[in-house]
Length: 472
Image 1 (tube, rainbow, N blue to C red):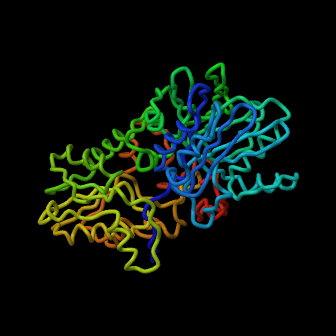
Image 2: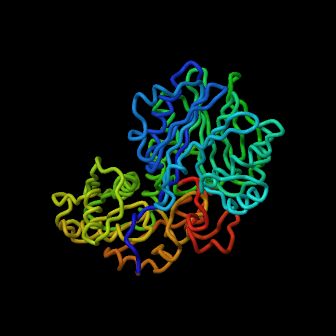
Image 3: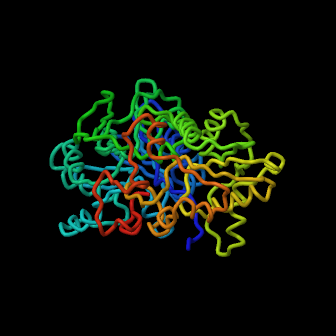
């Protein structure tokens, strides 16, 4: 029924921007992207501006593969933006790598985008009828075309008009003229925060990137806000009125690094609270609690502490495995799972085990892990998940499977339990997740289908990548 595949949703990308005339902005951007590498491993790029022209270098692969020391050294300027990208195989092309750089009547502009537009196809068609030429398949190019079309007025006014046309999720960093801009969609679905480095400012998808370069966290960019950074410092302008916050719940559950803070919520603490809620909702008599590392670790520690059950490293992660790809045979697919994780038999033997993971998408990797733990000698494996069942595709910047390939869309909880081979299976409830986060200002659409931004009925059965290629 279900195809083997990477059994986690994929974040699309991470962005970084800095204005610091007295600093090596390219090198700081490189370090910032390195800290955001978990958000995308397909391509990386840095664009640097001296206020008059923009120089860009980008390529396919990890940050360390795309940039050598000499390349970084050659990118001179006073402000820069960077991007790391995840994509599906079909759109994994150098032409789609970011930042995007354009020449237009007013000069040059560079843009890096995290998110996904739900009306990109309509906008692309409209722009094409008016003579726009597209060189990529990413919706980020639609955004930069809109900005240049409205550029008869001030750039800030052009950005406001562009935001009025956009539907969907986006966090943008833009180099233009002598300024750096940061923009966040009116619901704040995709994250963006502000840091201060000395007397200068920077922008990043996550606060961990600010920590890496020694910048002080200032605040999150508000939903619908346009942040302007130039020689005068930091300025803010309201682009669109925010109606309500709806930050992606999966940022807290899985995507973000645990040392990041996002919209005033610490990621590691949020995950620990998810484990505590799981303990309240599903206390199990067990000898040992283990995590599927790394994103399940904080929840497992919270669960173990709440119930007084020992925590152990039952699954060991290979820290040196980078990107892995789907292999052509079933035997090789199983090897790919074991390359990443291996069971610690000395810890698991003869134990009743609670295993905690952040999510189940297709169920294929989960079944291999349950089998692995049982083969290592566990008497029982109780599988607990710190997210509700993923039953709906995302249209706002996450690569999830088509709806019919999401296991929770096809089977009930007991059917999934049988499929993965666990002795019991429990998901955190939506209410428990909200209690753990301490807020209701999150998007839960992939769990309940309540999309906060309208989605065409034609696309509701598809993932965002089937309708068009997004930034990631």
